[in-house]
Length: 340
Image 1: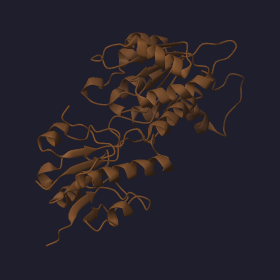
Image 2 (image 1 turned 180 degrees about the vertical axis):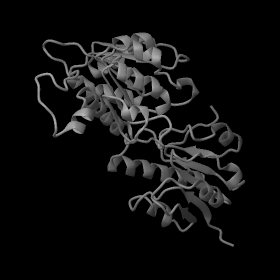
Image 3 (image 1 turned 180 degrees about the horizontal axis):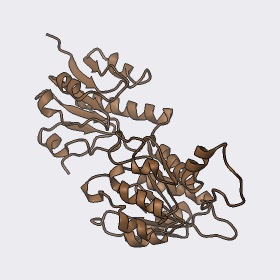
Image 4 (image 1 turned 60 degrees about the vertical axis):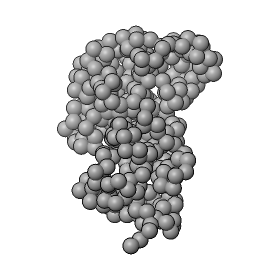
């Protein structure tokens, strides 16, 4: 009988990271052998007797009964953890690791890219090329940067954590001097902290507002709040109707925050100018007939917010080190407190 600790990994983490696990002589590593979403049946069968399991956001991390009492740690290669049962993890005293911070800059970069792509209507311009007729105002949309004739830009953020603030920092060189944000209603407003952030990022205005004001005053709305029941369809028909007709909506957080049908309707009827979407409710099962895929002036990407080589290696390394820390009773670089 082997004394090695069994670990199950739901995706090959690549040549830069897998040696952290495969070369460890104290581990018996079982890896999903295909470059695809891990089969649930395979995962449940192989979880039996595992001391540690490393999963992706696409896998439900509810493997407790399948693994049995040997399970010590679950590590996810994601900053989100809505696929994990935190209460059950705490109840069974199973440690849980995730990968925050590593992807902040990559997602902020993509948020700016989507704002530009949506505002410049790259969806329709790339689809029509090269069969088009030029005219002076063909394909014209809102300009992200300020101009001499339009000197004010306001950014609105639903959620104002690390990624939102990194996005704001990238907007300042475009001339954005006004920032509005909506935050968790259970947290008190802190004007002093807002003033300090305004000074840090060099903007004239930075303040917390209600969703109605954020919708009506923002030139670009960035959806960057956590998923879950509290934020489900926070961007709904009411919110979209309140937006400027020249505004752009960007969602690089979770698909569930935006009502897809309402957004498609808003784009068809011109309630806002455009949208840049990296996450869609129901993904990855999104086909060519999805309302947002067919909507005008809507750029849809396949959840690539963290898809840079540097970021993915960083996330995978952090996930592997979280797993190792949990297995051997050591500090985990990014452990979530599941008892809160």
